Length: 197
Image (cartoon, rainbow, N blue to C red; front, side, top):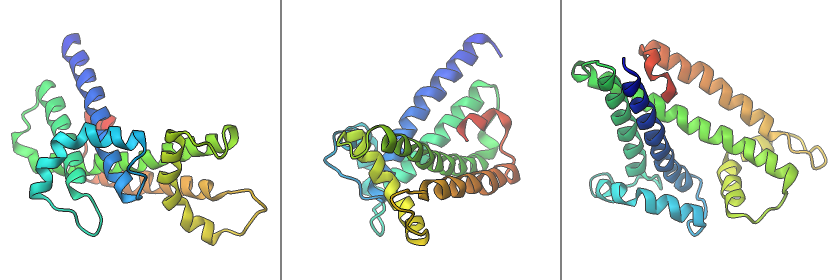
């Protein structure tokens, strides 16, 4: 494979993954009932609106879930995988269904990573800027709160020390390693698509 093709794949994967993240964030923000009027939420909505709006006509929401955003994330992931493999010289026509399964695994992996890194940011902010009113900090806390709330109910009060993020990290890592990793291995996800996990 030539250096030009490798550079092109890198650019497509980077930009495509960035848009995929924005689409998935739209789904997550609606899932956790984040503040719609937050400037970052508004940016995410505006960046994804052109593709989500047509999908909403076909795929309605269900039980408060924005299924159109989730389906769009899977389709973006699928398109990225198809383009990557095609540029590498593979004929993808014969295994589109397998690519769809890999796309769902990739989106699930990214879903967990969003929560993982949001937790890291939340912990750092609690040390350096506790109670910050920054729109980014508020959005991170709104993403983390539904994940941390069940652990806070189970754990004893330690006098102001919140150790629930530790248990959330452990849970996310276990799911990522044994469930997502197991699914990727059992479905034969090729190493060249590992950047999507």
